[in-house]
Length: 178
Image 1 (cartoon, rainbow, N blue to C red):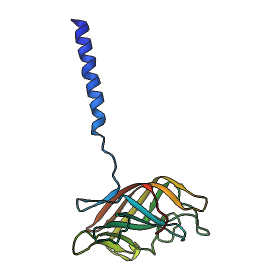
Image 2 (image 1 turned 90 degrees about the vertical axis):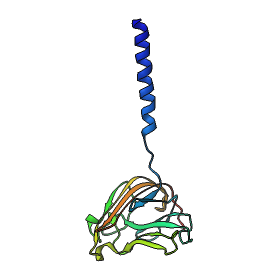
Image 3 (image 1 turned 120 degrees about the horizontal axis):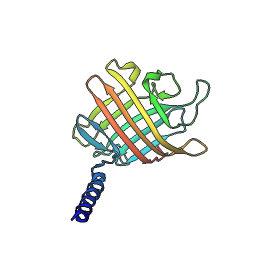
Image 4 (image 1 turned 180 degrees about the vertical axis):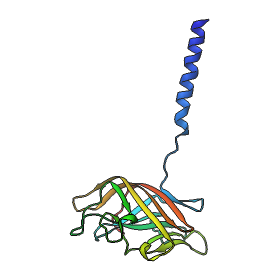
């Protein structure tokens, strides 16, 4: 009887352990605004300019009527010369002229074209918008060519205005034909 109870206890323990992994949620490509999730399965970049300009969108042509997208630009390097994007945190806290932050002279723009009215969630130059609170982008991993063209990226981002918060994630291939 003791052996039967022991076997029964081990089986219950194994079933609990095997079920616990079912609860893990996987990050999806997209952003959330006002409780609505906008899927963005594609990424485009113009890595040839001094700022790394990214568009995260769905579908690939973000201007289509059913499209939605998020767009922002990152700076990396020193005050003297531009550098490649690297793993780490990019923030508006660094100031608009800082070379390891969110670019201040290119707009942050989130838009949903799927409504007939084409909802402009938010857009603007963060340092000129008195409603803007903060912006953070964390690059978890990145692969680039020798010419600093981003091939793949895994990042999380968050932008806050007084009444608007946009939180997103992207992991995947980056098309370098913005």
